[in-house]
Image 1 (cartoon, rainbow, N blue to C red):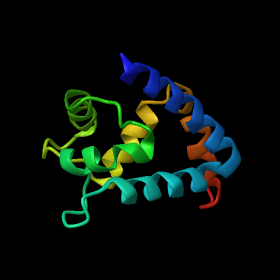
Image 2: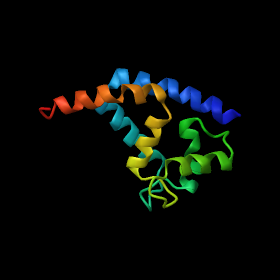
Image 3: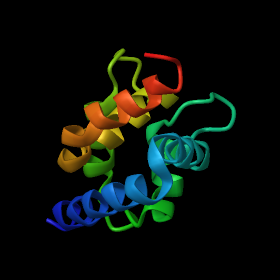
Image 4: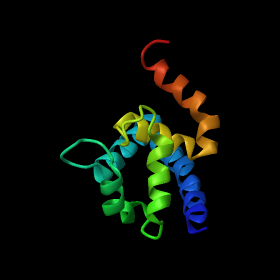
Length: 115
């Protein structure tokens, strides 16, 4: 179950990043991560691009089935790939602590727009 250990490590890093970078900074970093993992020709994360770039996330030891499971879990529109929004949503879903803090970050961002 190497995948479980890798996921737990990742969950611990996102709240730290959110605290250090703030809401906007965290979103920017997630967008940068998407750019690293995406298939440059299609503009989405495919199973192939995730497999080729898994080491960037420390996921090089995950099996092909585990990587396919990640794509499937985040694929909200059923096209077999992750667009940038699906990727960001998946990253938040993989971090329960951030899910509980997401309301705070949303409110902070909305303050900048006068809400």
